[in-house]
Image (cartoon, rainbow, N blue to C red):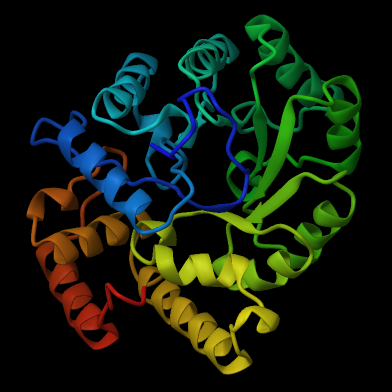
Length: 315
């Protein structure tokens, strides 16, 4: 708990918010103790908050009931609600409403919501209407929402017209955009036309560029493993003692880490790295349709990570 804050207090929408990996039991249910321990460890390393059930967290693979129970379980185990940014994305809008209402009622920092992602080639008005339906159904002034732009998965673009329309209709609801398109030009365009909202990118090598234009934060899968490094990339500048060589070293290190991930299925590789880091094979489990790393793949990942050498004090 942050001193002087209740679970319903607002905290800055900045800093590192790891896109939480979801540890699983042998029956592929959520291992709540590991989930909470991982979350609290990240907070202790300087993360502002955490984001459960996004893409890295296999969110769409869990039911509404499981996701609600997991958020409640984190809070019950001592994670402050106001340090949880809940991904509430689902294919069915009533499910999004249920998750969003629950997150708001328990005092979560906010909700991360994809545009409608099953039906393709939907018009801009359909995207606007989807967000409007959720916000109007929840009907709670405490609701804070982050737009989630992931067009390579959703095949839906959050256009500037959609964003401007939503901001005009709900000026006190939207607090940020997570742009995981991997298009740095588009990310900068969002930042320059977002009326002060934070714009966070999914491509970690762009974090320093975005921090320089005022988007000093990240919802990032890499944050599960290297939260301190990401904290430097999102918040430190030359005037504050972060020299250019250190910044270049950090950028090179995060790029090398991503290169390792890209040689495997990314979520399975993340979980494999957590298994190595914690000496706990249970971290290797994923839910179908994902497949855990084979033993041969895991051995290859171990060899790569031994060379990479995670540094707990620095990363």
